[in-house]
Length: 156
Image 1 (cartoon, rainbow, N blue to C red):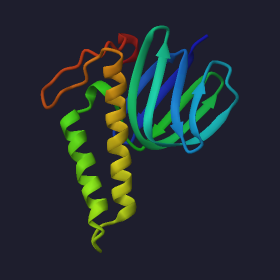
Image 2 (image 1 turned 180 degrees about the vertical axis):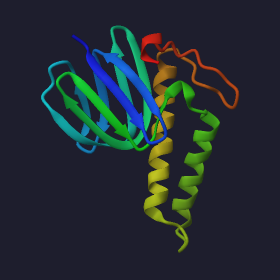
Image 3 (image 1 turned 90 degrees about the horizontal axis):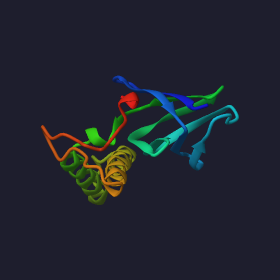
């Protein structure tokens, strides 16, 4: 019996479907959720969410949030979330560079916590893209690009 998974970000519903396993980055480290998992509520850190269904895998980048497990249902309420194939790699690289530059500047007008958050979110986006590339998919190269990451239609 698969897990029912729902991922919602502030701006939109990202995914509603099923998965055999959910892997997520939490404040306590990476966790894996399988069917019949004990009830759980945990904080997510900026990182990668992976949903596995048989041989298929869906990869998303999240900017933090909450993950709840109850009765073979996983609900993720994310601060921000996007599928790896939706990520504009050049834009993510630029965001990482800008955040790193702000942290190195050490000026009074730099909000260090905000810059660190931006850096962690950009790194999470790039990690999601890298995971798709490693399995042979192609994330979106830039504006107007398309992906052929092989995400199953029932995971849309």
